[in-house]
Length: 448
Ligand SMILES: NC(=O)c1ccc[n+]([C@@H]2O[C@H](COP(=O)([O-])OP(=O)(O)OC[C@H]3O[C@@H](n4cnc5c(N)ncnc54)[C@H](O)[C@@H]3O)[C@@H](O)[C@H]2O)c1
Image (cartoon, rainbow, N blue to C red; front, side, top):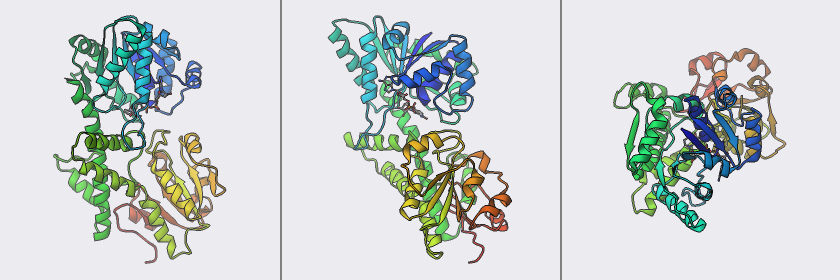
């Protein structure tokens, strides 16, 4: 099948590359000329494990090409996937202006039947809006060309995107056209050889499925963060409680980890967009509002723990804090709505000095963090800890899990460890000489 992917970001590049890997002929289009130039030179603009070699292989075999030219991209394609950003508007609703522009550009360049697929996460009703946008653009051209709009939301996780894309749990196809449904099934046939994972449904339900899935996952996170707070206050250990409830088949272990709140380019904006949609249609969204509010507070929890800890130690002003991990989760360079940004803001507000390190997200972090005399960018976690009064673990990169603390401690000024991801055993950290403060677990201090 000849496929066009409009928007060559985390979703578009991964999806396009996986389609090419499965034998389709794919054009990835973007309006960002620099991005396309880099891709043409074999430079991958995002960090995603294993993506690099797959892009290079499929480019070399001419199944994957890049362009900024809509006329070339649309003309050659049977199916056009839209994978452009859908950020939060000022009121929290989903801003679909990029989807609208992409749909219009497709319509301005098509000259035969196309299937237009919404892969971006878009509010219920957007497929109809895209159809209207295309019809208006075709009418302006004075042409009548048949097309179908399909909803095919994406569920990949950054950091495991290739695996998720090649072996999805399910493929949702929202369609009201038997012809489009059959073509979509054909596109995905190579992904479903072991068993059928395709769920065909009406378009509105497909659009809603994506939001409901993200809302459920975000709810589990905020729920556990709330349970962690209660655990802390009653003296229970949330790590034990998590295992105790996860063992129940009805609950399961996934997404039960308390931490510093969810971030990234999806959960925060998608929860806000669903709340906004609920309000628009007069539905109650009190659970979703609570999920969002708990998360807002949770992003400040680690900073508050530090303020409390240092309040009896002369305050945070002029103290030095090493921040380990900046991306919103491991194995990605994505800094969008990362909890590290909230912590950084709190620490600078208190007059602390911060020494930052992330294995891959520092270039993106530097774009978001304003220059400040109290910020030092470091080359590794050991350098970050040098001269620090405390370490704050914000992103649970694997390389932080089995660090040799001895040489690190010898360079530190104090021995406080704030674990925003509950990565270490409190008793081990106490034995190593740290004051260890984590999430939902009793503090382990050397002198109480
Ligand atoms: N990132 C994820 O993990 C993830 C997972 C599932 C779904 N989604 C959804 O997928 C969509 C895309 O997300 P992303 O993270 O890939 O975004 P992104 O910002 O990484 O990439 C989007 C790309 O679209 C390009 N673009 C914008 N307008 C365009 C236009 N008119 N024509 C061509 N290109 C255009 C941008 O230049 C950018 O390169 C969003 O709706 C998001 O919610 C994202």
